Image 1 (spheres, helix red, strand yellow):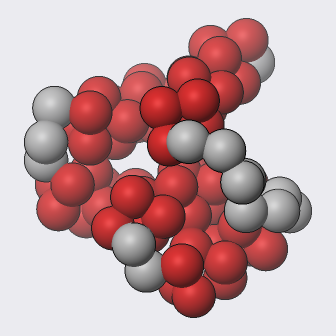
Image 2 (spheres, rainbow, N blue to C red):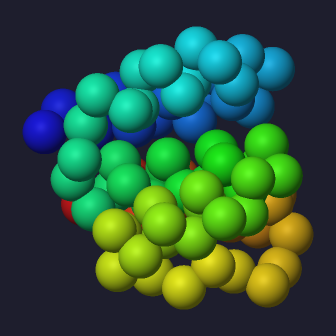
Length: 80
């Protein structure tokens, strides 16, 4: 999987294009893509849907702020 897709999706969301980010990432089903998808639904406030995607990613929903999770996502993507 080309990690630049993940970075692009996260940058789109950060720049205010939640819909574009969601359209892009929902095409992929790797653990990383599922984590980003979960994060996006958490941003949206749809915690039920977010929970589903966190489970698909093998993660628990974070109890800390969205900015911290965004940073964790970027760090995780960039180190692999």
